[in-house]
Image 1: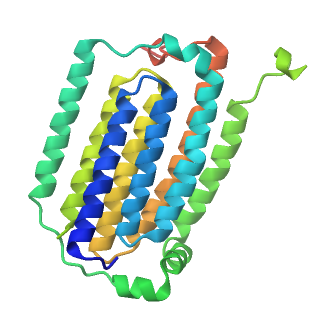
Image 2: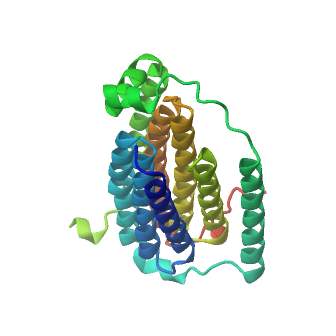
Length: 182
Length: 100
C-alpha cells in the first residue's frame, strides 16, 4: 500500500505489538478457551499485516480459514473435552525455565542473523503496480493454475485425505453407543 | 522506512513464542495452537519476502501452507478426540506406549 512512511510504521508497530501480546496470551492463559481467543487475535493482527504487505487476498483467506474454520474447530473440541481438562497442570518450574531460556536464545540467534543479513535486489516481475493493475486474486489464480499446478493438485488430494482421515478417526465404534444417541 | 528485516524479526519472535507454547504446555490442544502460531509466523515471513522481492511465489506458497495447516488441524484434533475417548485423559505425557 502507498501510505506515508509514518503511517506505515505506525500500523506495523501497532499490529506487531498486538500480535506479540496475543501470542504471549496463548502461552500464559490458564483456560484453553482464552488461549483460543488470543490465537484469534493473532490471526487477525497477521491478516492486517498482510494487507499492509500488498496481499489483500491472503488477508481475507487467512481470516476465513484460520479465524473462521480452524479456530472454530479448536473451540468445538475444547467444548467436547472441557470437563476433564482442568486436571492438567503446567510442567515443573525447571522444565519451564529451560524451555523459555532456550527459546529466547533461539529467538536472539535468529534476530542476529536476520538483522545482519543483506537483502537481495527486487528482481521479480510483480511490482505493486503490476499487481494492482491486474488484481491480486487474479495474479495468484493465474500462477496457481499455470506455474504451481502440481502443488495445487497435491493440496486438493491432501484435503481429501484429511477429510476421510478425520471422519474415520473421530467415528464412534459400532456397538459402543452412548446414551445421547438414544 | 520499513524493510523486510522488520517483518522477519517479528516472524522470528512469533515463531519462538509458538515453540515455547509447544514445549511448556501439557494440554495437546494448546500445543496445537503453538504449532499454528509457528505456521503463521512462517507465513508472515513468506509474504514479507514476496512483497520486498516483487515475486509472487511466496504468496502462492502461503496459500498452500494455509491449506496444509487446516488439513493438519482437522486430523490432529480428530486424533485428540479419539485418544480422549479411549482413555478419558488428555495428558500428553501419559501417551507413551511407543516409548522405548
